[in-house]
Length: 293
Image (cartoon, rainbow, N blue to C red; front, side):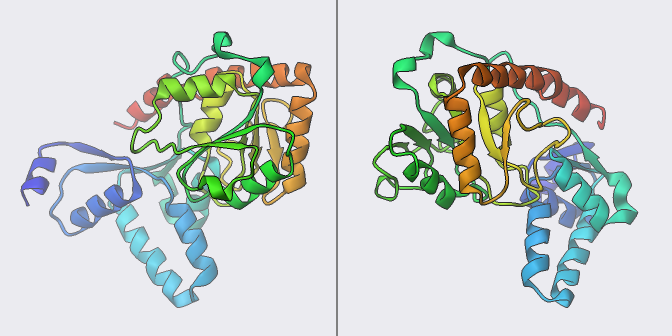
C-alpha cells in the first residue's frame, strides 16, 4: 500500500514492460491507483497470438477479455513495431484510439562507425541476442553450413558444445552487463555483417541490435517476420537483406552476397546509417513519446 500511495503522488506513470503496465492497470481497475498509465507494449501481441493458436476459443476469449479490461485502464498503449500496432487495432477495434505506433530509437551519436577497429584480415559474421524469439537452431545451421567462415556469437542461450568449431562464443547478457556498450560497439564495428535469425511473431525482436549495426554502417541479414517494425522503411537490398522465416538458404545467400560484394556491403551499410538517422534516433522517439504526456 505504501508503494501505491507513492505512485499516486504522480499524475502519469510510464510502464516499460507488459508485467509492470498490466500490474498497474489491475490496481487502477480496483480503484487503488489514480495516476494515468502510458503502456509501452513489449510482447503482449505475441502472447495473445500464441495463445489463440493453442488454447480453446473459450479460454482465449477469457484471456483476451481480461487483457482488454486492463488495456481500458491505460491512457495510451505504445507499440514500437507496426505489426504489433496493427494486431491490437484488429483485435480491439473499439479501443483503436488507445493504440499508437512510435518508431523505436537509438543514440546515433554513440552508435556510429569506428573505422579504427576494422580488420579485413580477420573478417567474421556476428550474432547478438538472448531473447526467446531468436531462432538459435537456425543460427547454428547457418554457421555449420559455412565452415570456412568465422562466426562470433554473443549470447547466453547457447554453450560452446552446441556451436560448430568455427564459432567463438561470448556469454553476453545485457541485463547482467556482462558486455559493455563500448565493447559491443567495437565488436559490431569490427564485424563484416550481422545475422539476426528470428522466429515469426508480432514482436519486433532483434530491433535494437539491428538498428545499432545499421547505425554503425554494418550490413544486416534479418528475418522478415510479422513483427518487422516498419516494412515500408526496412527494404530488402536497400538498407538490409531480408529473409523469410526458417529459411536457411536465404541466410546463406545473404551472407555470401554481402561477403562477396564489397561495393554492395558498403552501399547497404551507408543506407542503413542514413535510415537510422532519418527514422530511428532516440531524440525522435523521445519527442514523439513526450507528445503523449
